[in-house]
Image 1 (cartoon, rainbow, N blue to C red):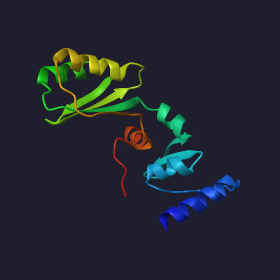
Image 2 (cartoon, rainbow, N blue to C red):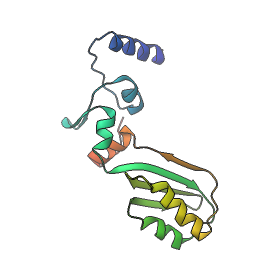
Image 3 (tube, rainbow, N blue to C red):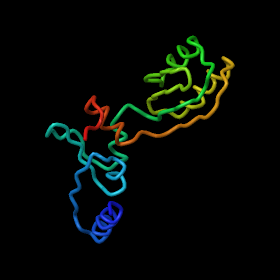
Length: 143
C-alpha cells in the first residue's frame, strides 16, 4: 500500500499538482520532490533541488573498502590525503568520507596499492540527502 500511495503522489505531481510532502525518508523525498526544504527543530536550513542541496555541503563521495590487512601506517596515509575528511577502519572495512574531487578514488587506491593492502570489495557512492541533513544539522535523521 505504501508503493501505491507514493505512485499516487507522483501521478499528481506529474499532472502539475503542487504536493507538500513531509518525510524523514530521504530516498522517498529525492524520488518524489522537485524542490526540497530541509528543516530542523522548526528552523529552515536549506531549500533547493536534490542536486543543489548536495552541492551545498563539503562531503563528496563515501568510499568503502573491504580489507583484512590494513596497517595503522596505511590508515594514516589515507587519512592524510587532502580530500579525505575522515577515514576509519574496524579490522575488516575501511570507511572514507571525502570532499568533492575528481581523483579521490584513484588517490586512495594508489595509497593502498603502494602499501600492498589486499582489497576485497570496494564501493564508492555520491553524497545523499541524508549526508546533507547530517552536515547541516550535525545530527542524524530522527524518526
